Image 1 (tube, rainbow, N blue to C red):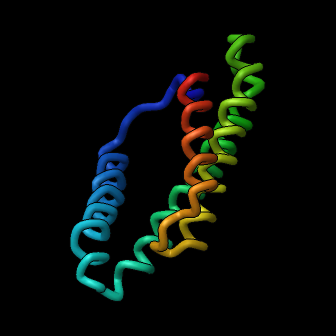
Image 2: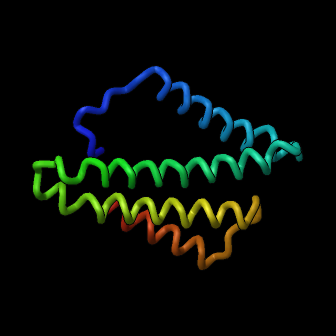
Length: 120
């Protein structure tokens, strides 16, 4: 989002296919079937989300001084920091819950967080 020189590479698609494929297998095959792969794959996917959040923050900080668009420079820490914090909180909650349903209050907070991000 904040890297003007970013170019899609073939391996970006490969990583995306691997993550989406793993998530779909976990959701539709491993979890319903009670496979022992379900929990470790779920934890790995949650940690991957948190890892992407860390990478987004690193990219945002790395390119902050070079960004010549003042409005984008001011907005950068709020958007990236807020979304990274939100992703990390969700990843931690997913790991702690390990497939159990979230409490209603957590679901309401998640919906509020999504609405806040969407309106930004």
